Amino acid sequence: MCVALPSQQKLKVCVAIPSRQENERIMTRQELIHQIKQKRSFLCVGLDTDPKKMPQCVLDLYDPVFEFNKAIIDATAPYCVAYKPNLAFYEAYGVKGMETFVKTCDYIKEQHPHHLIIADAKRGDIGNTSQMYARTFFEEYDVDALTVAPYMGEDSITPFLQYEGKWVIVLALTSNKGSHDFQLMEDAQGERLFEKVLKTCQQWGTTDNMMFVVGATQGKMFEDIRRVAPNHFLLVPGVGAQGGSLEEVCRYGMNKECGLLVNSSRGIIYASNDDHYAEVAGNKARELQQQMAIELEKAELI
Image 1: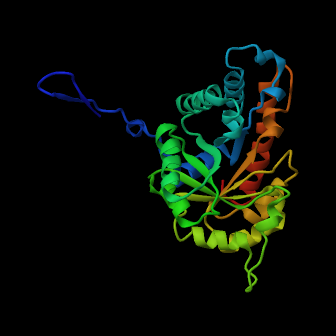
Image 2: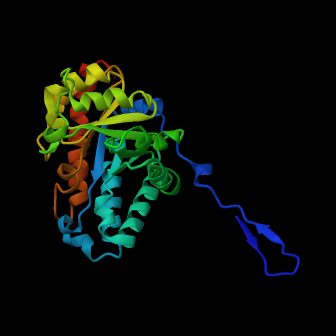
Image 3: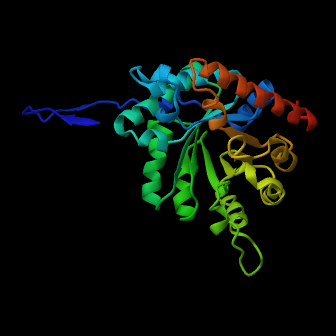
């Protein structure tokens, strides 16, 4: 950045703007697979942190959401490979909420640097707007991955794919009630919309920089997903509070490298509302990790 000084010589002083990329964390596909095998887990803990559901013991602290997140992260870190803060729960509190989001991400990077950080923001807009979103999350916040909505097509997705070492996670087949409104619509050839999304997006990204969101409640439809996208990682929300079956997800969705990140949010972070909330959350994460280890062993991946 060049700053003009108020002098007759019109001298300019150039100041280098520090780049976060100098200390950029790179979570490659191979590193992610290594972490899964080492921890015998493919658990992602969702940080959908709502002060209304937090225990009373943290509410009087200066930044209660951050303190709650820290305790949850430290308790669950041995049993998971990723964290997924949901931006809506931070944006709802304005500047202070976004400061908490940044502090949470920085804490993970500093204290648990081998965990993937997924910003669950579901961004996607015309090309120049997506470029700004990509800059926000991959440069300013320096997260490892970002969820995106594909409805606006190629130019809304490709700006996110320009960042080496970063992941774009595209909504494909979700677990919410309204998912059937559009995602299962068929064209004249019988191809469903989510299948078209999977096929088309693979023309833009690779297995090294693109994942897909597939809800755990979709069950046997994972077979259909894997026919179209056999090698991509899938981010799978809906296990636990939403009723998805881990065993069913693994039976139909696991591939030769695992290929799954199964997310649990409410079932872990709100498992207890008393002073022992972090310990209970750790226990819940360990229970899921133990189930995941069994599934990895059945698939002969560990």
